[in-house]
Amino acid sequence: MVKFSELFSPKDMTEGTPWKRIVEFSLPMLIGNIAQQFYNTADSIIVGKYVGDNALAAVGSASPILNLLLVLFVGIATGAGIMVAQYFGAKDREKLSHTIGVCISLTAIASLIIMVIGPLVTRPLLSFLNTPASIIDWCADYLVIYYVGIAGFAYYNILAGVLRGLGDSISALGFLLIATILNVFLDLWFVAGLGMGVPGVALATIIAQGISAVLCIIKLARMNSTFDFNLKMLVPAKEYSMKLIKLGLPSGFTQAIFSIAMIVVQSLTNSFGEMVIACNVIVMRVDGFAMMPNFTFGNAMTTYAGQNIGAKKMDRVDKGTKDGTMIAVGVSTVITILILIFGKYLMGVFTDTAELVDLSMHMMRILAVGYIAMAVTQSLSGVMRGAGDTMTPMWISLITTVILRVPVAYGIAYLTRSAAYPTGRPESTFISLLVSWTLGAIVTTVFFKRGKWRNKGFAGHD
Image (cartoon, rainbow, N blue to C red; front, side, top):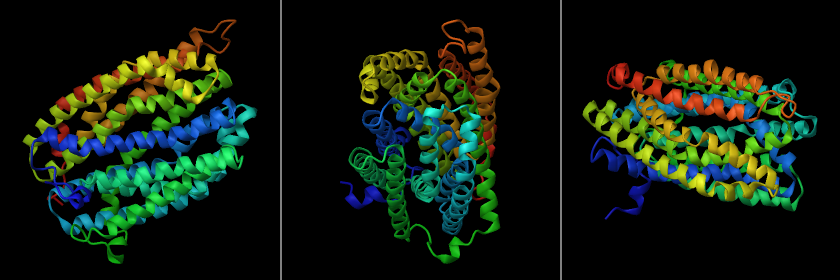
């Protein structure tokens, strides 16, 4: 019988049946991703119900800009997860300790940069995106509060990534559940109780994230049987800092490209008016649930591949890749079918406007098949990243999200202009997303089979 304390300890994924190890590791992450999505969705539900559809549109319009300025943390988190997994798999305590220390130090530096830059560029970016005057003040207030309190978000996401790299997805889940419950309570108190509106949502989020970050730090400080946690390890040594940046930069750059593409497409979405903006928010919130198994198994495959490559067990990597991808596709297919059947009820949670619910469901049907394609992309990309090959997924993302998606979205909009739709049909943004996802799955599969990622492992070689 497994002891309760063992659930919250690092997991060695280099032993045991591959699919069982992947599922054991993925389930807490999947539950955590559900909580994370609920965490994000609660903001939209509460402002939509208690403030109105324009407030809902404001929160959604702020998201692309928010994501753009968070790319520093995406890069740190990705590099950290790969290094932690490989050094843990190789049983290299010293390098594991230095890696975790560098993560903490670089996160502090990145947080300060965002706290300064974020508030300065917020309103100019919103104006550049043609954000409607009716929601621009709410958008700006939301973003400024979020950036000032960015450290909580940064430390939770990066330290939770470190815990997962160690094979401990249970602790990260527990801290996220605490933050989610607190976030919903604070949302209701600040927005419905105190009437703070959109700024109240941002304030609730940064408080909840800050508490989850503190819990992660406390957990890591107590894991002295696995690595050393002291001031010496917090010094950002050049060797580890450069390796983390080298591994994480492509993923951060990928996220930046994706965010820029989203911003460009958001500008097109804004031209369709508040109704379509609000529709886009609702679809993207439900989209988050549909995409959960994909991101979950992608992250799981990164840790699984990293640990096994660090332990030089390529046969387990191959078996685990097949098992993990099949499970991801199966789960994604089931969730997609459920959303198609019950999606309308989900849309109704966000708004009481029947026209908005119907429009949102129409757009969701366009995206449906793409989620299954993304299951393949995320699983195979996860393995490549776990091996240390973060460049290939970056180039694939560049091709599909910028070179393909943006021109397709604007091209369809241009070709469908009419008296009824002077700026084109709003379906253009969703069709372009489906095309991008489908091509991404095909290209990722081709590059994965070429196998260059197999020679990228570094644990034990540096």
